[in-house]
Length: 379
Image 1 (tube, rainbow, N blue to C red):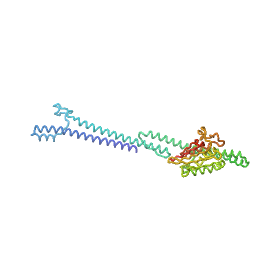
Image 2: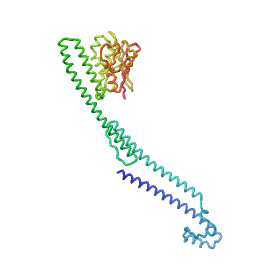
Image 3: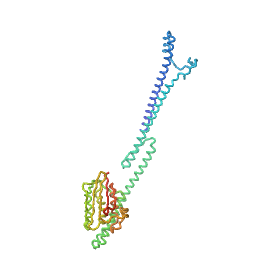
Image 4: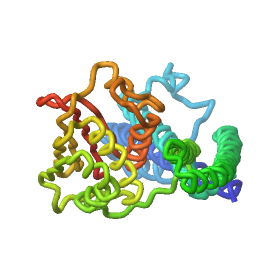
């Protein structure tokens, strides 16, 4: 098919050249005929004026005589050369016409070549774009100057596709292995928890609960690192998100008699995963509750605009020191004032928020407490 197209291009170019050559030849013939017509007309006019009685004879000679180049031309005996009849104006006109036509031919050929090259570049670029977003696309097997590049692109994309599929498979196997390990650990922990409850060993029960939470957190982090944490993309109302998160922390809120005030949290939503967003918000609110004084207060404010929605959480605790602000979202980091916990909650919250096209920052509020800014972008 490609060879057939090449042959068509060659035939078209040859046809164009032949047409232009014929046109130029016709122009040359016309200019030559006009030049000869003018010369012969001048000669005949002079002869008739000098010899009016020979007018018919002269005209008959013109009509019946064939004019062609003759080596025995009588003009040569009188010292005339072909160059004596040369008309520079005609030569200049023909040169200009021929030059313009030649330039147009060259520009036309260059345009055809560039247009073809652009089309090939677009095809190869489109192929890379489709493969990059995970769509299956076919590459074009064409024989031209882009063939070596096309072959290299195909080999590279195929290799990358195979490596990506292998990486996905490895991540899935890793997640499955991690889940199996977590279940294996959970089995003896469950037995230990039951025994501690039967024996009413409060200290052991707390340690078992702590280990259970650690296993759950490590399992979540493992899934996030493996890229197999499947998040939904649906409309999440932040008022519902906050209420469900507070329900899970009701015991802690009641024990410390924390007052939680919601500011402008109605009719604000973002596209994300409700369940995992609850997990993230629980960890953030839990941190605020732990660092708030007895009978403390936590404010949760919602902000919405065309670019993003923002959730601002502020407590009236002791706030952060400089070292904590730098490290608060690092895994297993525990603040100086935190006496319990394993230091992974805020790290998990940060990762969940980032997986939903958002980000989180921490700072000290103007009133001195801790302040978390959670932002989810609309696009």
